[in-house]
Amino acid sequence: MVPTPYLCSGMLQTVYCTSVGLKKDERSNIEYDRQTVKMSDNGTISVDWYPTRLGKDSHKPIAIIMPGLGGSSYEYHIRCMVKVLGSGDNGYRVAVMNHRGSGRTPLTSGRLYNGYDTDDFRDIVNLIVAANPDVPVVGMGYSLGANLLTKYLGEVGSNSPFSAAVAICCPFDTEIAGRSLDAKGFLNDNLFQPNLVATIKRVIKRNMDVFKASPIDYDIAAIMKAKRMSEIDNLITAKTYGHKNCWTYYKAASSAPYVDNIRTPYPAINSLDDPITPYKGIPLEKFRKNPFVALALVKHGGHLGFFSGIDPKIWYLGHVKQLFDALANHSSSQYQTNFN
Image 1 (tube, rainbow, N blue to C red):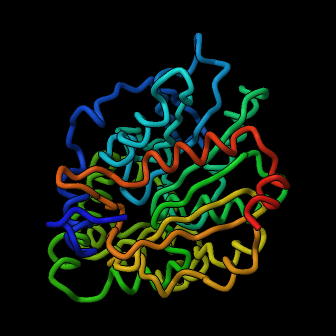
Image 2 (cartoon, rainbow, N blue to C red; image 1 turned 180 degrees about the vertical axis):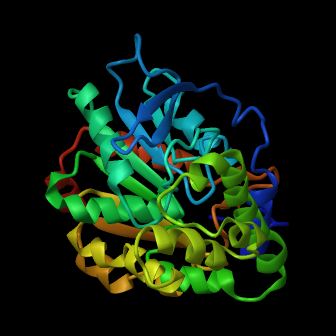
């Protein structure tokens, strides 16, 4: 990948990705068909389909995409990927899973999205596969969504329903990623942390009655004063899931231990200059040993950036489509033989 000349560092790539977050252009202009799913604990997940959930395209393969922390189907890089995958006669029916409280999804239980628990993703995948038993299914995750996808694939092993899966900017070691994000620095303090914290606070403000009615005694005043995601995770996530603090939660949430057991064709795309999910968190030896997984490392992609060309375009879009096309109708054993 050759980065856009004026976006030649990880920080610039990441800042640009953040700045175009809700931009609409020809590459990203799509309309979703929303499916709302009620979970067993009365929580709500919304699944945004493109071009449509039902109808004449029901024979097409399905791509399930999971955004990252605070992300949703509306993000620019997600919409661009969805449009590439879903367009044309050989396109996919794309399903983007919006986490609890995100993507304008109402919060109907006191449980927020987290990077540890794969239950919601597992339930949505099972629901989609059961409703579409005769078509191939592929998966894709971004950032913390990629972490959950990786963890899920390791949990299910050879019982994976996916023909292939791609992880973009997976942190793998969420404790390392958490400490990197928590470190003092101009962009962390003035861009990354404020954006993430504000996203969580908006969800809480919109659903204050749900949090106040929760059997868990959340300190709402402290949450609304929080400045960093480590504070938010101490006050909400660690408390919800019984962890001592945010750091023990981050350690438990790491997907690196699950890479050994992945039996789905799985390429991960990461950047050496990612300021949020550092290179040192990638389990390189596990990638060397497991023939089902592959790692693509670029020098200057930042976090969820990967912009190339004078007019910045996301580099990996066409490559992911080609990969899915090649593997959607092939077995894991064929992939293993070809990869070696």
